[in-house]
Image (cartoon, rainbow, N blue to C red; front, side):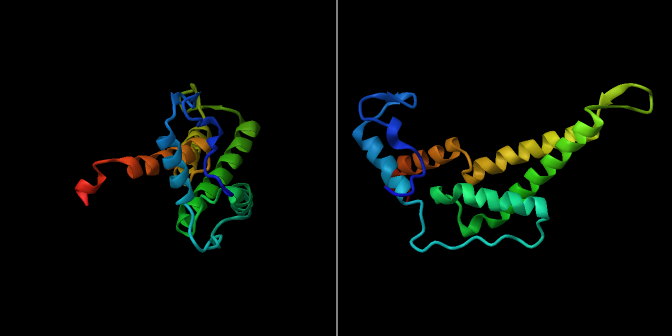
Length: 161
């Protein structure tokens, strides 16, 4: 299979890999599911004009890095743009932390966590959530293939159509 969504090398029939013993039926279902996750005719994602230069660089890198996986689709543009913007803001806040530190002195004279640290943590959470939703990490791609495979092998699936 050309553009694999997940690595099937650990899914060996009857052998432990990825935490369980795989049946032939499970491996085949996962492979069929992964092959269905591509469009017959690929549509090119268009970078939104509102992204700043740093976020545009993240966009280009992400598209380049994910090219072989065929996971991103035209419908992912807005979420991908938000992800790229979050990565760019996270990087800026990391630089602010290096320059100004993790703490500030408040009006009462107490040392407290700096507001830019909280913002950076917030962007880190957004990055993790969006990367998971976009399939930008191996676990997300494996979960997607597993879900499709389970739907394909559910003997009761036709009861609810």
